[in-house]
View (cartoon, helix red, strand yellow):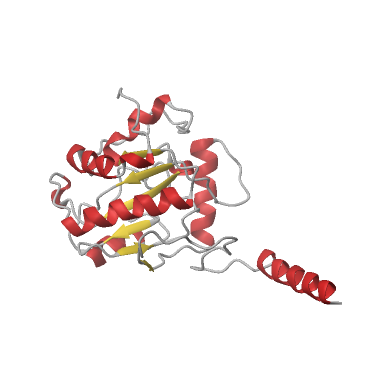
Length: 242
């Protein structure tokens, strides 16, 4: 009797998770708990990720990567670090929040109306915000979105100078460790400015040879510091080249 009851309860619990209806701005039903790294605190602050953004993401995957998918889940293999080129948190967040691309992004508008996004946004004081499910595709890096987790840092004013704070630097180091621990599939750590160097790897999927942008974030100094602090994780840098 006891074994039968336990089996019935287990099946009911599994079914409830499997049949849960998709919700706007709700995170996916996780099958294993998040493993905290040294009491790392992550605050959930969801951007708008409803049916329209999901549809635009699927369209992006089909157009740029040649894949027809049922969902927008990814297997993370790369961590990509960025800066927002904006020193204000709310302004940075509000650029990522809408489902459709803002009208001033004419440089990438022809490629898709899907708004840019990232899984994480790190404020000037080092607070880490999770903007969307970690294993959903975000539009943050050409050619590599389907296998990468993006981390945006508030700063890089003028898109020229590394003005990221000591608190942000520590938060990035902690977040890299958290992600590598949670996703053993992650093998690369790159800066946004290094993304074209990944064209020689099997992870590069972009079909449009004319779709490239020049990036400077977050810079060689920042990436050297990050790689030195997490060298025990054995994460690869992009191949030398472009």
